[in-house]
Image 1 (cartoon, rainbow, N blue to C red):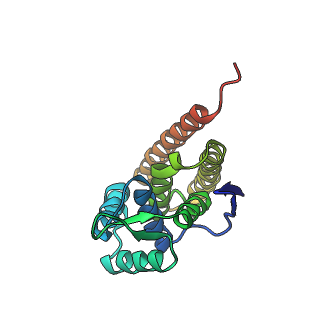
Image 2 (image 1 turned 90 degrees about the vertical axis):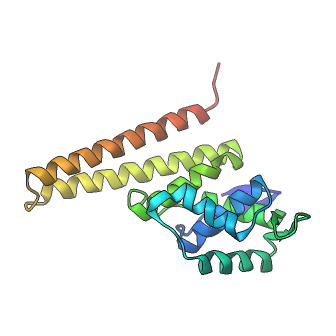
Image 3 (image 1 turned 90 degrees about the horizontal axis):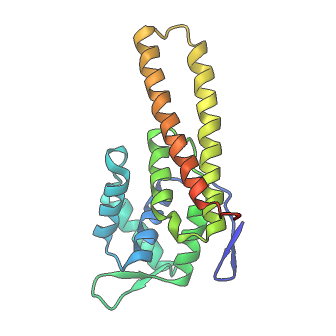
Length: 187
Protein backbone atom coordinates (compact mmCIF):
# COMPACT_ATOMS: atom_id res chain seq x y z
CA UNK A 1 0.00 0.00 0.00
CA UNK A 2 1.12 3.54 -0.69
CA UNK A 3 -0.36 7.01 -0.57
CA UNK A 4 -0.88 9.75 -3.14
CA UNK A 5 -2.72 12.99 -2.45
CA UNK A 6 -3.18 11.64 1.11
CA UNK A 7 -5.37 8.82 -0.26
CA UNK A 8 -4.40 5.15 0.16
CA UNK A 9 -3.68 3.11 -2.95
CA UNK A 10 -3.94 -0.67 -2.77
CA UNK A 11 -2.41 -3.09 -5.24
CA UNK A 12 -4.23 -6.40 -5.28
CA UNK A 13 -5.16 -7.58 -8.77
CA UNK A 14 -2.68 -8.14 -11.61
CA UNK A 15 -2.86 -5.77 -14.56
CA UNK A 16 -5.13 -6.77 -17.47
CA UNK A 17 -5.40 -5.52 -21.06
CA UNK A 18 -7.74 -2.64 -20.22
CA UNK A 19 -5.42 -1.64 -17.38
CA UNK A 20 -2.54 -1.39 -19.87
CA UNK A 21 -4.53 1.15 -21.88
CA UNK A 22 -5.40 3.06 -18.71
CA UNK A 23 -1.76 2.99 -17.61
CA UNK A 24 -0.58 4.31 -20.99
CA UNK A 25 -3.29 6.99 -21.09
CA UNK A 26 -2.93 8.23 -17.53
CA UNK A 27 0.87 8.06 -17.66
CA UNK A 28 0.96 10.03 -20.91
CA UNK A 29 -1.57 12.53 -19.50
CA UNK A 30 0.67 13.02 -16.46
CA UNK A 31 3.32 14.30 -18.86
CA UNK A 32 1.03 16.45 -21.08
CA UNK A 33 -2.64 16.67 -22.16
CA UNK A 34 -3.55 13.83 -24.55
CA UNK A 35 -5.92 12.65 -27.27
CA UNK A 36 -7.06 9.07 -27.92
CA UNK A 37 -4.57 9.00 -30.79
CA UNK A 38 -1.79 9.93 -28.34
CA UNK A 39 -2.76 6.96 -26.16
CA UNK A 40 -2.71 4.55 -29.10
CA UNK A 41 0.69 5.96 -30.13
CA UNK A 42 2.01 5.62 -26.56
CA UNK A 43 0.97 1.96 -26.36
CA UNK A 44 2.44 1.32 -29.81
CA UNK A 45 5.72 3.03 -28.94
CA UNK A 46 6.08 1.42 -25.51
CA UNK A 47 4.76 -2.07 -26.27
CA UNK A 48 6.34 -2.32 -29.70
CA UNK A 49 5.31 -5.38 -31.66
CA UNK A 50 4.22 -7.26 -28.52
CA UNK A 51 0.69 -5.84 -28.34
CA UNK A 52 -1.50 -3.36 -30.15
CA UNK A 53 -4.99 -2.81 -28.74
CA UNK A 54 -7.82 -2.14 -31.16
CA UNK A 55 -8.80 1.51 -31.38
CA UNK A 56 -12.23 0.78 -29.88
CA UNK A 57 -10.58 -0.43 -26.66
CA UNK A 58 -8.57 2.79 -26.46
CA UNK A 59 -11.60 4.96 -27.25
CA UNK A 60 -13.90 3.13 -24.81
CA UNK A 61 -11.24 3.27 -22.09
CA UNK A 62 -10.81 7.02 -22.62
CA UNK A 63 -14.60 7.47 -22.29
CA UNK A 64 -14.55 5.54 -19.00
CA UNK A 65 -11.62 7.63 -17.73
CA UNK A 66 -13.55 10.81 -18.50
CA UNK A 67 -16.77 9.44 -16.94
CA UNK A 68 -14.86 8.43 -13.77
CA UNK A 69 -13.24 11.86 -13.49
CA UNK A 70 -9.70 10.65 -14.21
CA UNK A 71 -9.37 12.89 -17.28
CA UNK A 72 -10.89 16.29 -17.91
CA UNK A 73 -11.02 18.41 -21.07
CA UNK A 74 -7.90 20.57 -21.35
CA UNK A 75 -7.72 24.13 -22.63
CA UNK A 76 -6.26 22.68 -25.84
CA UNK A 77 -9.33 21.57 -27.83
CA UNK A 78 -9.68 17.80 -28.16
CA UNK A 79 -7.09 17.03 -25.48
CA UNK A 80 -7.58 15.73 -21.97
CA UNK A 81 -5.63 16.48 -18.81
CA UNK A 82 -5.03 14.30 -15.77
CA UNK A 83 -7.04 15.00 -12.61
CA UNK A 84 -6.27 14.18 -8.98
CA UNK A 85 -8.48 11.09 -9.29
CA UNK A 86 -6.56 10.13 -12.43
CA UNK A 87 -3.26 10.54 -10.64
CA UNK A 88 -4.45 8.29 -7.79
CA UNK A 89 -5.63 5.70 -10.32
CA UNK A 90 -2.26 5.92 -12.12
CA UNK A 91 -0.37 5.23 -8.90
CA UNK A 92 -2.73 2.33 -8.17
CA UNK A 93 -2.07 0.86 -11.63
CA UNK A 94 1.69 1.33 -11.28
CA UNK A 95 1.50 -0.45 -7.92
CA UNK A 96 -0.31 -3.51 -9.27
CA UNK A 97 1.58 -6.68 -10.18
CA UNK A 98 2.18 -7.88 -13.72
CA UNK A 99 1.04 -11.46 -14.21
CA UNK A 100 3.62 -13.66 -15.98
CA UNK A 101 6.12 -10.83 -16.59
CA UNK A 102 8.26 -12.99 -18.87
CA UNK A 103 5.42 -13.67 -21.32
CA UNK A 104 5.04 -11.36 -24.31
CA UNK A 105 1.90 -9.82 -22.79
CA UNK A 106 3.57 -9.54 -19.38
CA UNK A 107 6.46 -7.70 -21.00
CA UNK A 108 3.98 -5.05 -22.15
CA UNK A 109 3.02 -4.49 -18.51
CA UNK A 110 6.65 -4.34 -17.41
CA UNK A 111 7.49 -1.85 -20.17
CA UNK A 112 4.51 0.36 -19.30
CA UNK A 113 5.26 0.25 -15.58
CA UNK A 114 8.91 1.17 -16.12
CA UNK A 115 7.97 3.91 -18.61
CA UNK A 116 5.99 5.72 -15.93
CA UNK A 117 7.68 4.52 -12.72
CA UNK A 118 9.38 7.90 -12.33
CA UNK A 119 5.94 9.28 -11.44
CA UNK A 120 5.83 7.20 -8.25
CA UNK A 121 7.23 8.43 -4.96
CA UNK A 122 10.76 6.97 -4.51
CA UNK A 123 9.78 4.35 -1.93
CA UNK A 124 6.95 3.00 -4.12
CA UNK A 125 9.21 3.09 -7.18
CA UNK A 126 11.85 0.97 -5.39
CA UNK A 127 9.15 -1.40 -4.16
CA UNK A 128 7.78 -1.87 -7.69
CA UNK A 129 11.20 -2.50 -9.22
CA UNK A 130 11.93 -5.05 -6.49
CA UNK A 131 8.53 -6.69 -7.08
CA UNK A 132 9.31 -7.08 -10.79
CA UNK A 133 12.72 -8.54 -9.89
CA UNK A 134 11.09 -11.10 -7.57
CA UNK A 135 8.52 -12.01 -10.23
CA UNK A 136 11.30 -12.44 -12.82
CA UNK A 137 13.32 -14.64 -10.47
CA UNK A 138 10.35 -16.88 -9.63
CA UNK A 139 9.23 -17.25 -13.21
CA UNK A 140 12.79 -17.89 -14.46
CA UNK A 141 13.33 -20.58 -11.82
CA UNK A 142 10.07 -22.28 -12.82
CA UNK A 143 10.96 -22.11 -16.52
CA UNK A 144 14.44 -23.52 -15.94
CA UNK A 145 13.02 -26.43 -13.96
CA UNK A 146 10.42 -27.19 -16.64
CA UNK A 147 12.96 -26.95 -19.48
CA UNK A 148 15.37 -29.42 -17.87
CA UNK A 149 12.53 -31.87 -17.26
CA UNK A 150 11.18 -31.72 -20.81
CA UNK A 151 12.47 -34.86 -22.60
CA UNK A 152 11.22 -33.78 -26.05
CA UNK A 153 13.58 -30.80 -26.11
CA UNK A 154 16.35 -31.57 -28.59
CA UNK A 155 19.75 -29.89 -28.80
CA UNK A 156 18.56 -27.04 -31.05
CA UNK A 157 15.61 -26.34 -28.79
CA UNK A 158 17.83 -26.44 -25.70
CA UNK A 159 20.29 -24.03 -27.35
CA UNK A 160 17.43 -21.65 -28.13
CA UNK A 161 16.04 -21.88 -24.60
CA UNK A 162 19.52 -21.27 -23.16
CA UNK A 163 19.80 -18.18 -25.38
CA UNK A 164 16.37 -17.01 -24.23
CA UNK A 165 17.25 -17.54 -20.56
CA UNK A 166 20.50 -15.59 -21.12
CA UNK A 167 18.43 -12.68 -22.45
CA UNK A 168 16.16 -12.92 -19.42
CA UNK A 169 19.22 -12.91 -17.14
CA UNK A 170 20.39 -9.73 -18.90
CA UNK A 171 16.98 -8.15 -18.27
CA UNK A 172 17.12 -9.21 -14.64
CA UNK A 173 20.61 -7.71 -14.31
CA UNK A 174 19.29 -4.41 -15.69
CA UNK A 175 16.38 -4.45 -13.24
CA UNK A 176 18.82 -5.04 -10.39
CA UNK A 177 20.90 -2.11 -11.63
CA UNK A 178 17.78 0.08 -11.67
CA UNK A 179 16.98 -1.04 -8.12
CA UNK A 180 20.50 -0.11 -6.97
CA UNK A 181 20.14 3.31 -8.59
CA UNK A 182 16.89 3.82 -6.65
CA UNK A 183 18.38 2.81 -3.31
CA UNK A 184 19.43 5.91 -1.39
CA UNK A 185 23.09 6.18 -0.52
CA UNK A 186 23.92 5.65 3.14
CA UNK A 187 27.05 7.80 2.95
